[in-house]
Image: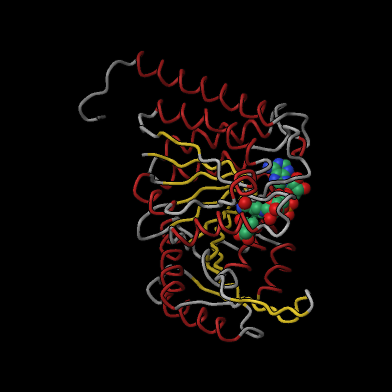
Length: 357
Ligand code: NAD
Ligand code: IPM
Ligand code: MN
């Protein structure tokens, strides 16, 4: 399988390259045959050529690649983020990656936050009217189709059931935004009927945020529309200990094509310093291994990244004095030890028996 690697802007250009050797090492060690090509889509290219996501890119990606691994987009030279919307939202929409899984990993357990990723207030429908250079009317439509909400809810409930989760919360704002709110509630209630293992509840997004910050422990699965999910994922990252820790997978349930990226942005305040935490990026690779059924590679990388976060190599956001490179060097050392210990065991005990194979 081939991965399209898009480091993007700011710290994306630091955390993504730093994590690629781990991807290669694990691919080789587990015989996964994963290779990658790097694409320089981002602010520099946009400013130099006016190209964001090149024409035909999503067709090419879905034909020749199985996944995208993306760092972040965002550059102070492009304050309206036009290139970021073109590339990032272009990939999400163009590849129909309408399920965004952003797990909130806490001490007591994991909250599986699922965010709809292509519609809602991100539908791109809208416009504005200006008078004498000042915007007088501005419209961003919140658009949802039943097909997308159904596909999203059904897929997420299935994933939650597979993961052995018992509770699922729909986050909405149907008191103030009744049309899309009602659609979401109706779909959620109907789809839940096919999942008797799951107990559903519904919460207004404002009180949900309040409750989540005060006590996240009751939540297991959370389903949210696009903008609500975006905001909740940053609250989740804060609960985890910072944006340097939160990873995500954007998935098309029909094709299985997926895009893996940290939840954080390009962090211009620390870009270029070499101190960005690569944890979230590396954990996005963990999500990629898991998504494609390479659980052993995922478990090993997860363990080594977690161990590094608690070591001297931890980056400043975690209270350490480490660097992006130093963090991943430590991960590589741990991976190397673990893989050679395993290889040693395999040699010492001889070839696998027919049954073991
Ligand atoms: P941000 O996530 O880039 O940064 C928020 C804060 O978290 C900053 O203080 C930053 O230093 C810190 N932080 C983020 N990632 C970190 C890491 N790996 N290690 C240590 N600290 C980290 O959000 P922002 O500052 O609001 O946005 C910056 C730019 O990124 C904007 O242009 C925004 O549009 C864009 N953005 C892009 C994405 C994406 O590509 N998916 C996501 C969010 C924001
Ligand atoms: C994210 C980001 C993006 C989003 C922006 C940069 C368009 O905040 O991936 O969380 O809103 O989805
Ligand atoms: Mn966000």
